[in-house]
Image 1 (cartoon, rainbow, N blue to C red):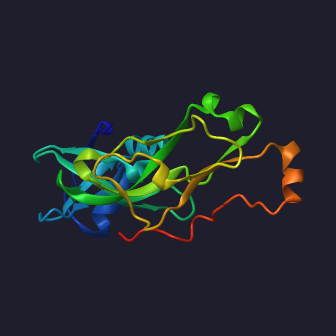
Image 2 (image 1 turned 135 degrees about the vertical axis):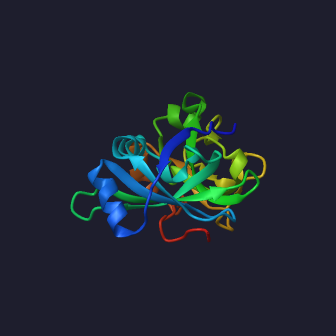
Length: 214
């Protein structure tokens, strides 16, 4: 299911350069810029409280917004950078990229594991180990999925779940060109000692060293 596209309100920032940006911050605003899409860059201001709350809600960098600016047509945008104060860690500038509905972008999508109560491995005391809580996918901007769902029905201890085991939304594809692990069901603690005496090794994966190209 495609995620709902939330509105995001901003105003045009009059003037450019550091002076205008400083004045915006003194007025309780965060300066930003909207670029791309074959149109001239548009300097904007965003109310600090609105931006701060949206950042706290999470997934700001992976959310497609419908940007509404008085005097301009609505446009779909995605954040491509938030600059922060090095001391206070508060937002000081935001970059948005304009997108057409058919534009393909790389974006991290949340992974949701369901039906744990239908997994024999969980019933035996096994533990679900989430290797990748988010997966980077290449998707069409107008059809960004809200999440990808992993069904644990029938999964037993030692089962490893790869990206190929998941039904991805139509048109979406991983940015990593291999069948990477997104989770597994680990043995209960009481059984792990016995497993250590065997030659069987459950597949694991270190993440963070590999990322798809933008």
